[in-house]
Image (tube, rainbow, N blue to C red; front, side, top):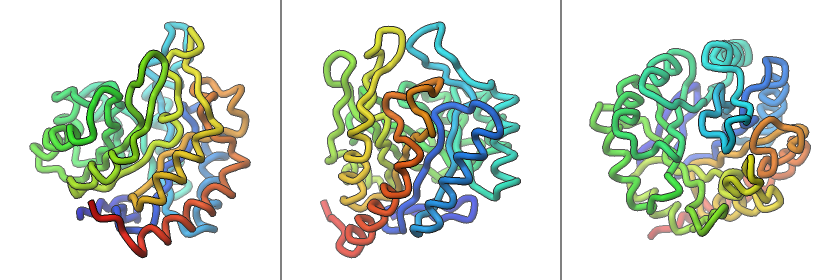
Length: 277
């Protein structure tokens, strides 16, 4: 198994659980720091490793009218302030090769969105930065296809890779999560992450925006962590119904303490007797 170290953390499938959590998109500095501070406190209390996540640009909104975020310059400034001022590792999405080079100067982890997970030039550019690269598995890919995806980043000499499951397309506006994908992707040796919130998304399900079933996000997180994986990816907000994006599938912030406590208990059990496939 490969471990990936960054920001004072070591992430691996046999290491204590890493929680990657934050709002879908950056709204402003105060809001980001509020969520980062609360999540850091919760994770510290329960023994979880914590990475703050947020997007400076939601480039794949359902509608042209969808709010996209602060933009790369203002967004990276906020992320840098959280990384430096709060001493937390941070993760954000990129959408093209030039963004990879810019974002990697600020954040610990650059994330390849699921829709872009086969874009060779983007994966190579991400690898060339030397940053940790978290690759979301495309909704159109089988879990075993991720070995080829990881190989594109590896071709640059960068093996600091995380692989994230977020569900597969299952008819119109619907996703399904196959838990077999987690041990399948773990066969690459790379740390595997479960995106518990996007796996309950209903893409384009509200016509002009995506819907979701947030009540099932904790179910996905618990099921995945019970298998023994490196981490869980969760979007959270203090008022999801009024969040600028992905509100229907985000977990309310006031529910996160109880959820993380449960996930850490499951993580300890799972890693005491690992599944071998």
